[in-house]
Each structure stands twice: as structure tokens, then as C-alpha cells.
Amino acid sequence: MMRLDDYRQVASPGAVDIILKLAERVRGRRLLHLSGGRFGAGAPEALQPLIPLLNDVGIDAAWEITGGDPVFYATSAALQDALEGGERVLDDEALGHWMEMNRINAKKIRLEADVVVVHDVQPASIVSSRPGGGRWLWRCHFDCSAPQRRAWSVFRALVEQYDGAVFPLPRFGRRLGIPQYVIQPSIDPLSEKHREMAPREVTRVLQALGVAQDRPLLVQIGLFTRAADPLGVVNAYRLVKKHHPVRLVLAGTAGDDPESYDVLAELRRAAEHDPDILVRELPPDAYLQINALQRAATVVLHKSVREGFGLGVAEAMWKGKPVIGGIAGGLTQQIVYDVTGYAVHSVEGAAFRVRHLLNNPDIAARMGAAGRELVRRQFLVTRHLTDYLALLIHLTS
Image (cartoon, rainbow, N blue to C red; front, side):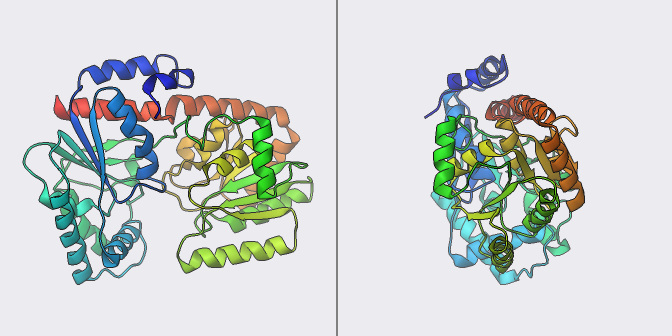
């Protein structure tokens, strides 16, 4: 288990000392996080390093998960999709069952705490069972700025039972009658996904994946969905390949929806006709493989057309890579245009910027170094820990 002192070697100078000073003001406070699971992106990935670090600095931090039956999980997923703007039918009986399951969850968890942070949709209705005392926050990790009207009508009544809401960006939220706070996500630089790797180790992992390093590598890692636009990346690669001998690696996980299977099938058909397109389906916990692919990349793409605040761009910048991202979600918050990479609107724009970086390796190297320093200042877990301590001080002072 990592300790705060372990981060002195990677965090900005003075960051650890600031954390220790803040922690003195709230030492012994109980902070409870509730989420729908312990694995995956979003809340679980953020909480895995945060909980031990909070305890290391003297906070009584706990992390509990909620659960239920298949109807509970299906309703939670449908409600979140609707809050993100999807057209989903929300059945009153299913919503009532979701709320009832969280009432049952509430009886199994010690909810007494100075501050309770409830993450995303699955456990959100547990607020109806909150005990007296303590401050409760709803922590939203996705963009709910344009929700389905009925979904928001149902959900707003729940959210306004909280004492505040936390969003990754101001524009991801909605007008509410409670205070709103902004805390952006972070990466853990000492985790398996982001730790330093020797070139020999990178080569060994890539060999196991069947990825040769004899050509410049263009890499996109993410879900195989229309929103992530891997097919647009294939088209950009084809434009680049007319001028440069490059290889494209598309790696990630397929969701459990038909769209993901359709996208993956289209990508595999494209790869059948071009041996330099490599499609690699990875399990959600393939952290070492993701680390190695990002470190081996010449240019990392994250050409999403719809995005929350995914950290794929920050992950690549931490490895010193220039990045090309779409104009969506939190991507433009991570990319400093013409300094750490480029945000683009089109396939042609992505291809143009890739060619520019391939033709100017000195610019690519300078962007990679600038990107790593940007992540050090803004997107490491030490900054995330600082934000939570400041919020804890604010809520309990």
C-alpha cells in the first residue's frame, strides 16, 4: 500500500507538505464514500488510491459499495444513460424497485460520518435514508448537462436532498438549489497503469500483444463505441499512411451493448485488409498493457466525439507523449493547444496534426515534456487529495 511520502518523488515541489498542513485541520474526521462497485473507470479508479492516502494523513476514510438484483442494475444503467441524454424508457415500477433496494442497502452500511460522498447513480437514492448529522454530497463523474427531461425530473428531487453536488466541470452540471463544487479526476502515477517501465519491459509486453515496434505507432486506447470514434481514427490513419509508413493500434474494451460489437466487427474487417491496423481487445484491468502501449506510442489519439471527463489524454501525457484529441467533454481541459497537443474537429484535422508531429519530432518531444509537467501540476492524485481535504475543511469547519 502506497503512503503519501512515496509521492514526493513525482508530485510538484511542496505538494505533499501542503497536504499534510491541510490534513492537520480535519484529522480524525470520518469521510465515507459510497459507490456502485470497486472496479472500472470513474469512481472506482479515483477511490482506489484516494482512500489509503486519506487514511495515511489521519482521516477516517471508508469506502462502501451498494448492490442489488438484475433489475436494480438495469434500472441504474438506464437512468444514468438517460441523464447523459440517451433516449431510455424509465418504468415507474423499476424506479421504485431501485429506490427500495437502496433503502435495503442503507440498513447494511454504517452511514454515520462527518461527510458522506455518494458517487454517480447506482447508490444515489440512498440519501432518502440518511441519518441525522453529517453533510452529504452527490459526486457526479459524467456529463448530465443535457438529460432526458423525465429522468432529470425524477433525479433532481433526489439530488436536492443532498447538501451539495460535485462535478468534474461546471458545464457538466445543472441548475440546482444546493451548492455545487468542482473537482476534476486524477491519475495515480505509482499505479500499475502509470508507473515507470524500462524499455525492455515495454518491448516484452508489446511482443506478447503482437505489436512490432519497427514503425511509428499511432495508438488509441478506449471503448469500442461510436462516441470514441475509432473508425474515424482508422480513416485518419489511412490519410497519414499515404505519406508515412505508420502502424495503428486500437486497444480497449468492448461494452455489453450491440453497438460495441458492431464497431468492433467493423474494425476487424478493416484490419483484415491492412496488416498495419492492429485491433486488440483487452480486459478492463489490462493496466500493464495500456501502460506499455502508451509508452511505445509515437502519437496518442483520443478522438472522441462524445466524452465525459475521461483521462486517456492525461495518461498519455504523463508518459511524455504528444496527444491529439477530439472537441468533447473534458478533453479540451487536458490539452493545451499547440503546447501539449492538438484538439481537432475532423478526420482530416487529426491526420494533418499527426503528419505535422511525424515531420517534426523535436516539436513532438517538446509537447510530450510539456504535457507531463501539466499532468504533474493538475491531474495527479496529490492534487485530487488536496481538493478533498479542502472540501472536508469547508464542510466541517
